[in-house]
Image (tube, rainbow, N blue to C red):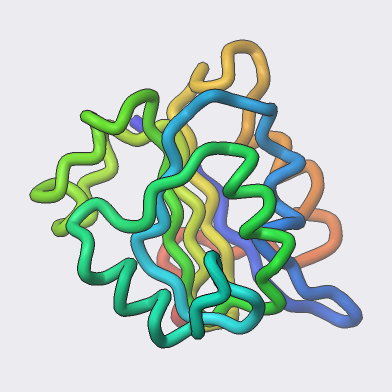
Length: 156
């Protein structure tokens, strides 16, 4: 079972972007997939956001990339309305039928931006060996933004 935390994306003088979350995750050789992306910024291969969204939705396993590519992508995003990014150990674990019904049981990490109001970060315990990804996110963001209880994201 995944551990998770949900917190506000925005607060006084504070806007948490995907690029801000990634330092809480150690360098890795996982396979990452963008399953949903609605935001602003520079999209991969110079695509428009609309073309990128269409491409993401057209693939049953999303837009697949590796850690260095995800970090580059994250720095090019200015804002996220909705974003869903998952990590698995191998591409074979990106099972379309499971992802289609939000079954992330094979995923090591799930990063989700909801309606420009909140982030949920979930990770399998021990996914990054001794490094606790969710605890690192809690430590960094529970002080600077209000932490939401589970189910409160729609109230943010």
